[in-house]
Length: 80
Image 1 (tube, rainbow, N blue to C red):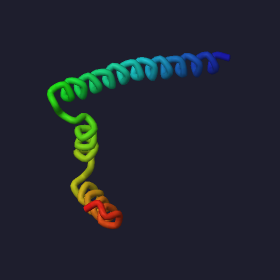
Image 2 (cartoon, rainbow, N blue to C red):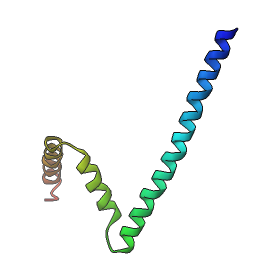
Image 3 (cartoon, rainbow, N blue to C red):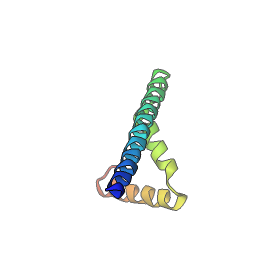
Image 4 (cartoon, rainbow, N blue to C red):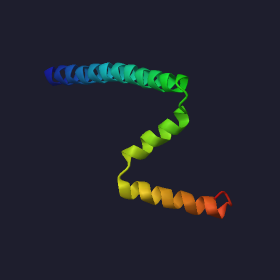
């Protein structure tokens, strides 16, 4: 039964760590939202900013590939 208690204690510690990290994550998400709202109040477009943030996460080759595909799709739909 001692092994069951040790496993339960370990599980509880993992759960508590996850809960703390989830709280921190929520705080960070709120901070990010506030930055987008501040930028919007200064005249910037948050939707475009989110796109730029997403693109900056990509490697150059992946970004170039995404740009090329977007151009192909736009041309196919007559949006170029």
